[in-house]
Image 1 (cartoon, rainbow, N blue to C red):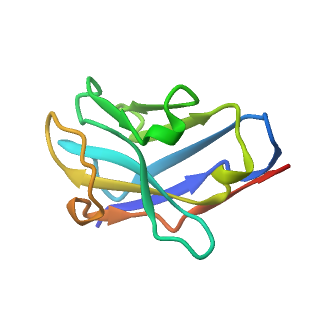
Image 2 (image 1 turned 60 degrees about the horizontal axis):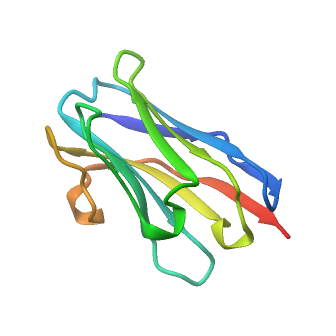
Image 3 (image 1 turned 60 degrees about the vertical axis):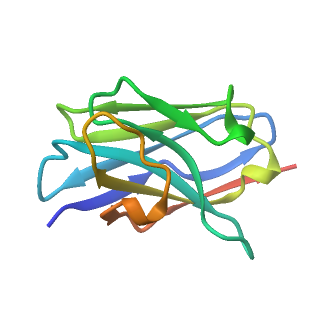
Length: 125
């Protein structure tokens, strides 16, 4: 059973940067696309970014394009999200997810098979 564990969340001032990471255990993420979702208080969980298994394809929600960068290390079974120019609207619990796919980015929550517990990112104004 694959387990995903996020790390790297925290409190940062507006304009600052954070890097959240996700490590998989219990199995290799071979042929799994990875994604990051977030849920702000009182809001639905939303797609933030995704990366294909082969690492060639990535996608981002419009609100983070140019500020967030997703990457993965297949050898280490990890995926990271580098976030810069953070603003208070980025405050949320960030979740890592894995879904079976080869060369596509998965955009829908229903397409993901495994989820982490989440890590809190708080951006103060």
